[in-house]
Amino acid sequence: MEYSPRGSAIVRALICNLLAQKDASGPVGALRIAETRWGKTSEVATIVRAAVAGGSTASGAWGSELEAQSAVAEFLEIVKPLTIIGRMENLRRVPVNAPVVKQSSGATGYWVAQGRATPLSSMAFDRTKLEARMRVGALVVVSNDLLEAAGGDNILRGDLALAVATATDLAFIDYLNAGVAGKMPAGIAYGAPAIAASGTDAAAFKADIANALEAFTGSLVNAVWVAHPRAGAAIGLMNGSLGVACNVGARGGELAGLPFLTSESVEITTDGTTITLIDASSVLIAEGAVTLSQSNEGAVEMDTTPTGDGTTPTAATTLVPLWQTESTGIKAERHIEWELGRPGAAVVITHVPYGAN
Image 1 (cartoon, rainbow, N blue to C red):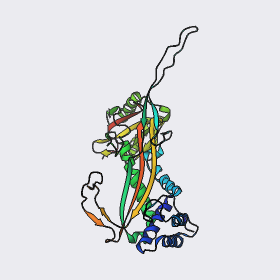
Image 2: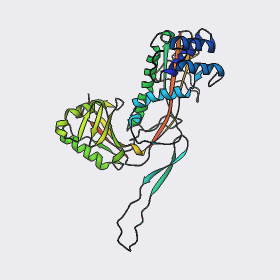
Image 3: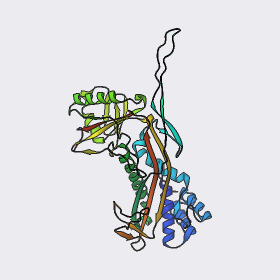
Image 4: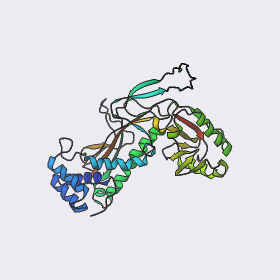
């Protein structure tokens, strides 16, 4: 039996369905393809075999969508390590669509002399609810030849996972992202204190880090830095001037005793980049379902900025018929939403010159 990389089973099951639809062999044909290509005892054969019994796993048309939970969860597990969120520890994960309490200010403790009254302090709380109705979607159209080719499943698996991860990170770490109601959450550092970088040498960098730490009111025990790999590499070249508190490179490291994560989703231009300090324990995150679906019928708007709208009927442009072009559309969607649980739990250093092109 062939080795199956994590997350490949659900993609392979989709391929079996599509190839069976192509030759009109139905569920039995899909199972035959799965057993022939990956073995009778393979995970993909098990998934397809389960689909045969029910005829449909989601909607009225057989094979329109597979939701084999263990296989989908496995696909999510290859997405998570690719994201900033997936590499942050101590996030506060909350149930989807359930009210949660977030603390906006904390109580204060005092030393009290014997017989004296204990000073009173107050705590402030807000209620919020993360519905995780917002979704990150990746849609690709591929030729049917790719589905039949050996290794095609690994190409699709990798591209879909990377596309979903990148879109998630771009929204999460962009401090200028105000969010779009019903579509995309705001960046985790949106509205947070912003500190402009003061220079290009090691002394300026130390001052910027000190200023960020001073402005930060979150928990340093659970805090992490997030920056672009080029910034990490440039900072690493200054390590000798920065002292033992800095052990940073393109793949991350540790700065001032805090984890330093790098991601190419952090924007970097000739004007500089950003370094963001985040209290992970103050990040509320709700994750809903992950779905993978496919079709080789109908038409797809082949555009990175599609105009088609089903809520406010708007005609689509650049439509390409899948059946006529021997193509298949495969879509991956991840439902996720986040919110910063307390003010001051994120600080961003802007216009950082290190590593800028």
